[in-house]
Length: 295
Image (cartoon, rainbow, N blue to C red; front, side):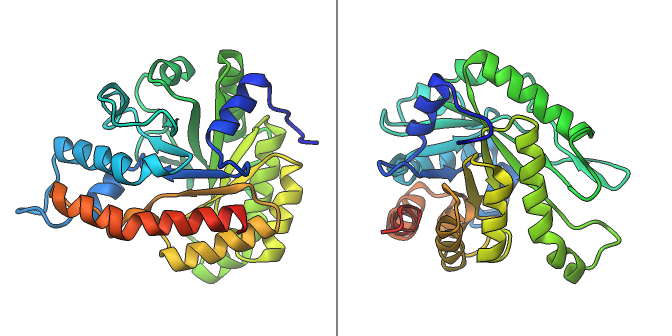
């Protein structure tokens, strides 16, 4: 039994963001600057907000609508995509609540909400679920820290509103820490972040791949029955598929993939986007679904 049981509304939302086999499969397209960065074929290299909005709409048309759910932002993509009928009735909508970037206090990172975005905003935008990102260093932050209080508050607000919340946690290298030191700590940092988040009431988690089958099993144990999905973190598709296979074989409940699917399939030109998304990104999504469902 899960530490934090889903209520009836949350169970319905969980089913909406999952495959027929019951595993999460979400295309992440809430990036703003990260998406602009891969659209490099414009005449001057710059991407306008209108061009970014058009690219997001095409990403939904030719890729996201083939997944269980699509994760979109309230700044560029919403409410235009559902309002214009781009999102199909069979694809659930997850609304990202976090703003781009982060603040830094005493060497620790803190995310911000998109301006004015609350649980009610997500519902008003037609969201089936919400997603909020927090950064966490579980060796310096515990269940009484600022980030833990923020998680508790949003979990309570979303539960009160009848909204499923996906808690995304990213750990990161500190300024005085070497790459090797951070890599060695990563499995424990991810598992401990899962444990703290669950202690704060999280009911669904989105987490980094912790590095190995053994580490995935440790994350599953730390999550205490709370489902967790592995995020792609910008790795290439081949690498991510193997990570997903390892994660689901050791207790993960699915995947949320962004750049691993579409980072080389976007363009400022609609016709180029359509071709790349359907010929390159979509087959990757099909392969990812098989990995998630272990078929």
